[in-house]
Image 1 (cartoon, rainbow over the protein chains, first blue to last red):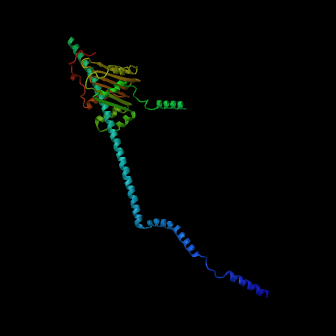
Image 2: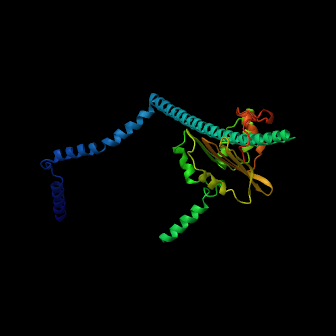
Image 3: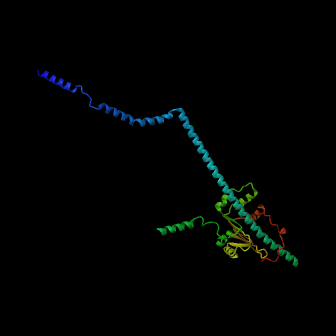
Amino acid sequence: MSVDNDTKRTEDALKHALRRQDAPDGFADRVLARVAAHNSTEAPRGYHDSWWQLFTRPAVRWATAAALAAALVAGGLHYRQVQFEKAQAERAQGEAAKQRLMLALRIASSKLQLARSKVNEINADQTENHEEKE
Amino acid sequence: MRMKLRWLGLVLLLASPRLGRAQDIKLPADVEKLSAKAKETVEVTMDGPMLRWASKFLSAEDPEEAKCAKLVANLKGIYVRSFEFDKEGEYSSVDIDALRAQLHSPVWSRVVGVRSEHDGDNVDVFFKLEDDKMSGIVIIAAEAKELTFVNIVGPLEVDQLADLGGEFGIPKLNPKTLSKEPKGDRR
């Protein structure tokens, strides 16, 4: 008899525990709100993925490679132009220095010639005077 | 600390290459100021490195430039000041004497000294001799309307320098063609 009573109590406890119960008020709204919030935090990651996915397209890859090549060529041409202008400026400075050097030598030479001519004049006069005396 | 820095600065200044420049003749300040009065001024200051750099641009194919390159190959400096005036008496003989006074030393020999009372042209040529070798030349040409100072430092062949005159369009000297008109006005 006591076994029957125990069984009955257990059944009652199980029935009580597993009884149908309605969800509390606003439960469904809260769940929907959480789901919406979860989706919104994942949005940037999806955007990032899509930006990189651009390069999976062959056209975009070719365009990028072409742009990089054009930038390299433009950079190289610019560097060459700068080097050319630098060499030209250096050459112009060198030519100016050469002209100054030639001018300095010309002046030095002409003054040496002047000294030489003065000495020759004196020598010629002395010779002439000597010949006149004789 | 500040005093130490000043001493360090002085030492560095003394050790700087500028002070070790080849030019050992100083132009009097009044001579440097003559450019204000001059109609034309030529000022050439070329130290050793500048000379070497400039001579790189001398063409070996051009005979005149090749001669210049050979002439300046071992030079340490070329310094030229030339002033041309509109009228006479623009510079003082005191300045020229101060310049000449610097050359009164055993290493310098005056090889030419011409004083002409006729046309007022005074020309001095000094050679610097070191170990019986020529290591420099100074030319001071004081003419009526022109004053020229040339200082060439380093070994050079004077004949080569004088010969450049013909190359630069200045006729080479020939004693037979020299004028014999001015007489008795030189000392």
